[in-house]
Length: 529
Ligand code: KIV
Ligand code: ZN
Image (cartoon, protein in one colour):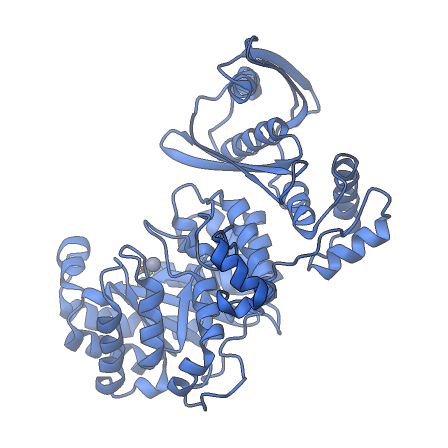
């Protein structure tokens, strides 16, 4: 990693802190898919997981290290508490990566020391250099985080950071773990660190923060002005509680307001050199991918990637934009990869045209995946005249970026109306190729379908969220259904797209049940028997 003063390093923690959002649990294949997309996006570092926390996390970090951690790829990072076992396990998982980083942490605030760790400040000053030195003996690139730095005594923090850098930390991260600090305070904290930690010039200052007061992005930007050069963030801002600082907001703020930020990085205001290495045109696509795989829906008014982020409703605004887009638009939608491409392919398009268009929008599929996606494309093209890039993305998300299926929908039929009892029949195919059919009556068509599926996959759960969004405009648009359900206190999400929203609803439910069944001990009685 180059220790440049004049560029901002983007450290993505979607797969570690982001995955800590309730219900956002991802399997190894899904994490790998996201890691590949993050590499295409151009992030400098991927925090791929917390290897000691579970065998699944270890496996995911190892797989990402092997597949994405290539010579020209990003640094792959693994989180570890400041203990020998955590650090050793992280190093093992990271071994295949060309560039690897261990990120070790220990809390420094009095409240964490007294109640959570039951340790003294003296203990911390002993443990930190010992564990950083141990990590350094295993990898060259070590990051240290004093957890809850935002509520720690600054004088103590300076001492801890100095000892971490002396022991070999090349990045020191300053987490606002509970999302408590305000922008002015965060800026002063970073300034204080620069002025009071004698060896700070030997490390990059990083920031990490949660959004409990909605201030995470503003805090980071103030930190940049005061010397922070690495930003730890997640796609769509997902993460613990109110989430982490959102990557797309930080990157676009630095992109759109480059002239304002340039001087803080020692450049002339006019410098056209990008402040980050992110390919902004990938932002929308990665946002959709993360939303679809985690089941964390992006709110319509979310900055940068929300459905309304580029919509102008008021007549005065529309009139202004038609005369000159700059009247009300500070960001060109195309700069985040939103295209106006209306007619891309139709039902007469062949496999080559399909493959080429997918390649142009960033998807290179294996022959097997291409065949699968092509069959689905033809089905959609039969029902929908105009297939746009967004439809293609929905097809890929639905057909290719899905976990292995234990159950597959073979048939769903409903009869409903204002004078009928909504009735559904379903047929599911199980992993052994056996077809299982059943029928049920519900309060509406979706309820009837879910009840019929419940009769086949006998596993108790509670539906806690159901949402339908259209992929594009138009009456023939595909509908995307995202659901979340709860089983034994855990949340599982499901996602599917189809021109028929009842089919999408059925597939989304089966998708969530497949994830649930993939977790050990969650076997439905129809499989157990
Ligand atoms: O929020 C936090 O403090 C963290 C640390 C592990 C960096 O996620
Ligand atoms: Zn965090």
